[in-house]
Image 1 (tube, helix red, strand yellow):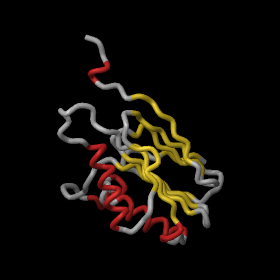
Image 2 (image 1 turned 60 degrees about the horizontal axis):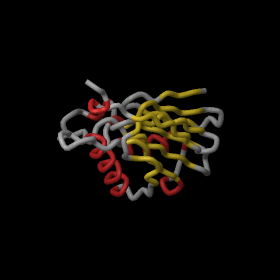
Image 3 (image 1 turned 135 degrees about the vertical axis):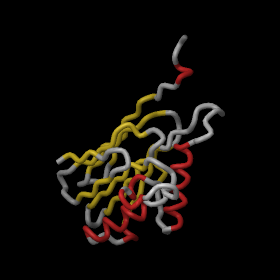
Amino acid sequence: MEHVVGIGGYSISDNQEDIIKTFALSTCVGLVFYSIRRRVMGMAHVQMPNSRTINAQDAPSRFADTAADFLLREMMNKSGVIKSEILISLYGGVASRGDNDCFRIGEKNLQTVKETLNRLRLVYSDVDTGGYESRTLIAHVATGVVDVIKRPLLFRSNFVN
């Protein structure tokens, strides 16, 4: 079965036939957890850096400061995964082009996810982050392999007037 993770969403699977996908990560961060021992995978499509101004209870996977803890707890509760056995990989978090971008959402998302993982004492691999390319992730539950498809982002400066 194919599970599509939308913006701010998540999916967890232990079915070895499943594939978990998320599309067009740019400023968003793809957070992938995998237990080799139990062959369980979780993926979150993190949209915003922090949940301080918005109630994160309805969508904890949407925020960089709550997604990792939420995904970890869900995998532990639903599949008996142990914290120390999880491999974690990060994708997305596109950098801003130009000095005009005061929001720098991609960079803040990535920084906050990393800070949260460090606070939780979880080791991660910064697999494919930053840069100026959109990423689609296709993750295989049976193996833990994540295929990344990259597409260049088009910015206003790329167009000719």
